[in-house]
Length: 208
Image 1 (spheres, rainbow, N blue to C red):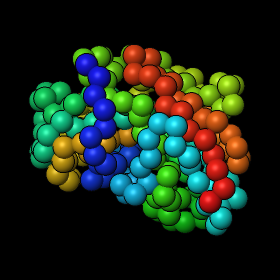
Image 2: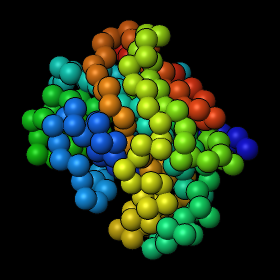
Image 3: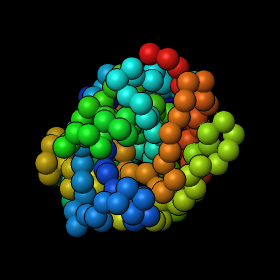
Image 4: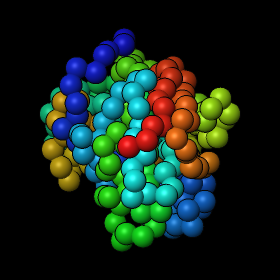
């Protein structure tokens, strides 16, 4: 089943360092528990919309991710029951001002600029999310290529863990982490996040 995005999520909960090789490329420790942060709803854009390159950053990176879309309000969900609360899956680009991320002690500024959370092209249900090829193309060239089977923390664990911290609302999004191969973009670039059985999310980099 394919759904259109009916409304903006109230929040996007992102999971950092959820692929071992990505943690290594950033010289960060592999976490013992999921590392989470938030992107505001004001950062969300959809398929074929433009990502604005902020003036205060000199290095903006792409990060391809599988997104989990929540079906209904939930709190304190068990891993066993997590599937009941998942509407479906989408592609997501966790755009990051990498220079600002390195400068700050936390990641909010680097991750939260308007347009820094492309999402789409739609929501797909009825698929197994545990073995999907995930790729990112920059101007037609493959830059990231992995598989969701390589996630450190799997989707049921993430839904359960996050719901024990905060109430998840209908249409909220969990971004499950990016694989190795993140890199910079420039004005005019075309970015495509392709996930097997989900689709292709296409966006373009524009001057702010």
